[in-house]
Structures are given as structure tokens and as C-alpha cells.
Image (cartoon, rainbow, N blue to C red; front, side, top):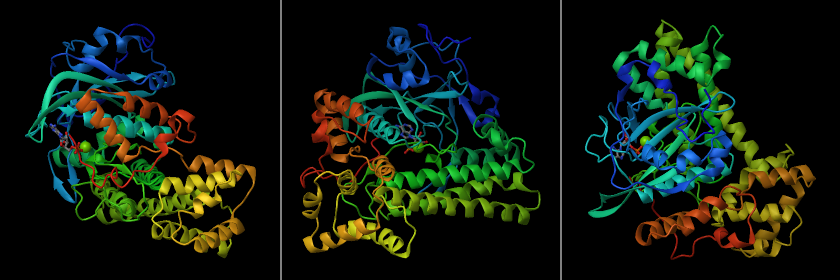
Length: 494
Ligand code: AMP
Ligand code: MG
């Protein structure tokens, strides 16, 4: 029955119940004091074919906040393990999240609806199970920015104020719940957990679930598990290339924060770079630069190796043969990443030729942007506008440390670039003019936490939906941070 457009709960499924019950725990969200709806993502609801009426009703808000008896629901928290900064933790899991279930879209896909910040679960360890309004705003804005950029990501359907305060850094701050949607919440860490708890049968159950729901094209293949693993590798390679091409640093690419459907998940101390530097790190906890911008492809590979270790028994009963079978998908990961990244960089620069001159130019472009300490987004936006015929060259030249060097670089660019209409259109689609800038995200958080003012949050969440164009009202959002505004460190902010 499709209840999607009526004033009733559209979340009618719980697909994870077919998995072995060691992999999750039955647990409902915890009641909160005074729930209210701080933001509802109408555009996303429309995309899913859902009416907003139920989500705006008192029943809907109470349901999303943890204040109902869930008699017809079967909420769960999912177990997972994970390598955090290279160290294995056998028992992580949804410590502050509840999977309420799924609704079905008109094209019959299931969409997970998960609450984050909805109370303690059996996986909470010492945590309080709650989230701050700031952490939810952060994930809301950055996940929606990703979606605007066309990069696969979990989404944020709503932000609920709990009315309760939570303790962070010796202060009481407003609590919130994020209503997160995703095509799946299965992670590399889910496989690690299944392997440790149940061995081959647990891994097979998860793999069969992924094939049935997300990779049906491999279902009839004799080597379906190796084919599944390869398809996962390809999606991850493409995702990491897309991140890097917009200057995004995930920040905590632990195996528990890597989705197996190729969506960006778990936005902690992530950031879009302002000034370009290849080894840039923002996260306050990443002291060794493990998850720096230019390390992300390597880390994706490392995580996929950890995934392969759990898959091996499904590949072949002979362990040497199984190890060999993991190699081709991993090699494909590297080639897919390289191709996607190189192709994307050419698109950003509007170059289509494959001559030695063009190749040299491409290879030297990012080192030049780094040497000149250019703002990554502004630089590519300016090039795009020059290609579109705008009078921007002078402004761009003024950003070079040495105008003559800038003139030479632009002359080289004009010599190799393709000035066809199609190439320039492609260039625009590779070069956003708006990104979720750290200083603006931090400002939106500060306004909301300290002054209860969500104006900037709402402005950003609207503007970031269309990052390739900017309205006159939003030109200030294009600005790079002033030296005072520059954010040097980002925090998990749980
Ligand atoms: P994250 O850093 O959000 O990827 O979380 C890592 C692990 O810590 C996951 O198992 C989370 O569920 C758990 N965790 C994070 N914050 C909290 C919290 N406030 N209460 C309980 N568990 C948490
Ligand atoms: Mg996580």
C-alpha cells in the first residue's frame, strides 16, 4: 500500500530484519522533552515523492523525535566494527542512531530513514547518544552541498530540536536530532563486524543483501561475490575522485565511515578547502595527516583491502586463489580513480586534447594553484568565467604572486584549451561557484547555538542546492574567509 501522500507515516519497511539478528539490536529512540521541527527538506521530500504534511504534523514530529511507542515499527541500531585511524575497534555500531526503517520510492527503491542523536543504544559505550544542534547543522549543510554538487551522499531530511540540553566541553548546549536518509547504511565496518561475529555466513548474508538491493546486475554471475566486490571498488573510486575534484576532505575515512553503496557518509570534521594545498588536513584529530586531501584515494584502497579480508571466503575456498581474486578489483579501483580524477581535472580546465603539451599543462596545473596559494573554488570559477567570455583575466592575474607568471600561465592555458560551447558548458558543471565554506558553516552553527538564529543556516541550505549559479542576494556567500575568519581546524562535534 502506498501511503506516501497521505497524512500518515510513510516508513513501512525494515529491510535489515532479514539479516542475522547478531548484526543489530532492537531498540527504540529515547523520549525527549519538547520536540520541534527546525528544518524540513521539502526539495528532498519532493524528490522522494513524499508529501511533507505528515512530517510537519505533531504525530510526525513526535515520531522523528523519539516520542512515540513505535508499536507498528521495528526500530533497530546496527552493529559495526571499524579501523579508526588504522586501529581496529571490534565494537562500534550506532551509538546514537536509530534506524526507523524505510519507505519505498515510486520506482520501488527503499530509502533508509535513520535518526542520529536519538538516544543511547547497546552500542553507545560511554557516549550519551545525543547530538548537538551544531553537529546536526554541520552534517545538514555539508550533505546538502554534496547533493547539490551531484556527488552521491546520504541526505538530511529534517532537523529536530529536542528541547533538551546536552553536555559538551563542560557546557550545556542545545540538543538536536538529524533525520538522515540513505540508500543503505551498510559500511565496510558492517562486514568486519559480521566476519568477527559470524564468520563466512554473516558476510554472505550482508553480501546477499547488498546484491539484492543495490547491485542486482551481479546477481546472476557465477562469481557474483567477486563481481560485487569489484562494483563496490568502482563506486568508491569514483566517489573519492569526485570529492577531490571539488576540494573536499572527508576527514575521518575510518572503515566504519565508508558506505558500501558509494555514498558519502558520516560528516564529522570534513571540509571544503579554501586555499589549495594537496596535503591539507582540517580535522583536529588527524594529527598525522592520514586523511589529508591527497591521501584519500590511498585510504579508500586501504579500506577496500580491509573489506576484501572479510570477503575472501566467499571468493574461493582456497585462500591463495581468493587473495588473487581480490587483486583485479583493487587494480580496477586504482585505474577507475585515476581515470575519473584525470578526466575531471581536464573538464575543470576545459582541456580535451591529449597531446604531450596538454598533458604537461594538466600535470602542472594543481601544483601551480598550490604554489600561488589560490582559493581552489575561486580559481576554477574564474577560469570558467573567462572561458564564458567574461572580462575576468585582470582579476585573476591579480591573484598571482607575479603577474608575468600569471600571463604566461593563461597564455599556455588558451593554447591548449578547447573553446567549443560544449566544453565550456562541461567546464561550468565541473566548477561550482558556491561551496559550503568552513567559516560560513561555523558562523551558521554559532548563530544557531548561541543566538537561536537559523537565518544563515536556511540561506546556506537553499543556496547550496544550486552551486553552479549564484543569485545577486547570495554573492556574499562566495567570499573566501578573511584572515580573521579562516578556519584552521574542524572538530567532530558529536
Ligand atoms: P563517528 O565519529 O560519528 O563516526 O562515531 C564513531 C562511533 O562513536 C560510532 O560508533 C558512534 O555511534 C559513536 N558515537 C559518537 N558520538 C556518540 C555519542 N554522543 N553517544 C554515543 N555514541 C557515539
Ligand atoms: Mg561514523
